[in-house]
Structure formats: C-alpha cells, structure tokens
Image 1 (cartoon, helix red, strand yellow):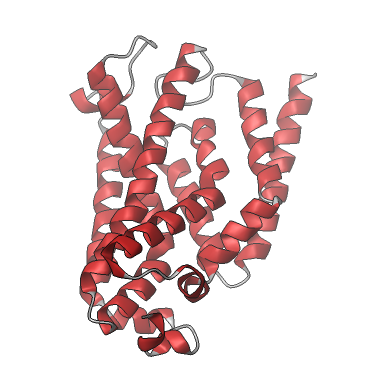
Image 2 (cartoon, rainbow, N blue to C red):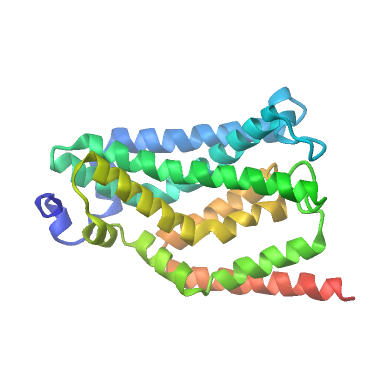
Length: 263
C-alpha cells in the first residue's frame, strides 16, 4: 500500500533525492529520451535519407510505409519530448514501488505512460496526412496556411487558461498528490495509473503539441523549444504562472497573424 512507502506518507521527496536513490532508472529514462533526440537529429540532418523521405511523402497519396515511418517519427518525438518532464512522477512512483517490494509496478506504470504518447503519435500522423491532403501543411508538416497557423496559435493560447489545462497541470506538478488520489494495487493497477497519468499529461500538453505544425516536425530547434516549454510548466517553481505568460504570448502571436490576414 502507498502508506507503507516511507516518504509517501510525509512530504514529497526532493527531486535530487529521487535521482540519487534510483540512478539506474534515471539513466534508463534519460537515455531513452537522448536516443529519441538523436533519432530526430538524424532525420533533420539527413532529410534526403530513405527513412526521412518516407516520413515526408511529397503528396497525400501515402502508402503503408509512409504511415509506419511517420508514426515512428511522431512516437519517438513524443517520447523524447515528454520523458524528461515526467521524471518526477516516474521516479516518485518507482521509489514507492521499490520500497513496497514491487519493482515491476514501476515498469508497468512507465509503459502505460509511454503508450499514451504512442497513441498521440498515431493521432499526429493522421493529422499530418489529413492536413497535407488539404494542402495546409507541406511534406515536413510545416504549416503552409496562414489561417491554420493563426488558428493553432490562438487555440493553444486560449487552452492555456482553460480549467482542464490548469487541473491537468496541477496534477502533473504534484506527483505525490496524484499517487495518493489514484492509488491502485497490483501490476494491472499500476498500468491503469500510468494510463491515467499519461492522459492527464496529454490533457496538459496536447494544444502545445499541435504547434509542431506551426514550426514543422523537422525543425529541431522548434521541437526543442516546445519540449522546454512543457518541462518548464511542469517542473519549474511557479510553472503555473509561466503557463499563463506562455498563453498570453501565444494569443498575441495568433492575433498578430489574424490581423496580418486582414491587411
């Protein structure tokens, strides 16, 4: 049970203590993220390579190989972007599971969390195909439509102030609170908890992830900027206030785009 885990019954453990207590898990999670970023860098730097070309079909007449390659690219990108921001939750759960003598639960929780983002990768792939079919994005999933760019910026900006965004962000910023409120026993229970946390994380970040179409999925600097924004919201002191400032900036950028459309 959760109350048997020592620190779980008291104050939230410090992040530095979580890291020093689980070096192997930290290396595994960060290593996975770094490998993902290396894969993305390879695609961005070798866009004429065979695999990169599969992720960037020149027309909307996609073949099965294009779908699989694009899904792989989106999925790796999501995992690379989101794992660092999820470290406090994953390490807190790992510490509790280990102290309860149930280390397998930690891997079930992490696998379920990743599964949510693999699902979002499939949604991103479908959106890329649909938007390319409408000629709203180019083969690199970069917006070719000023109205689409403006709409995505305004949508992301508005969502930053929504009750759902605030609730999801609050949960992501308080790992122990999530565990106390969502605790379920057994490996299956850990998997369900991982799915629920993944959905909360998705609820926090989906609108920001749509901005990948504003900068393009092959723009590594843009992808990194969005990953940093997500991590700062979740991890930095006062992250909820930073989310508000980000929302204002996105709304301003979107309004500027809309004004430009009318001139």
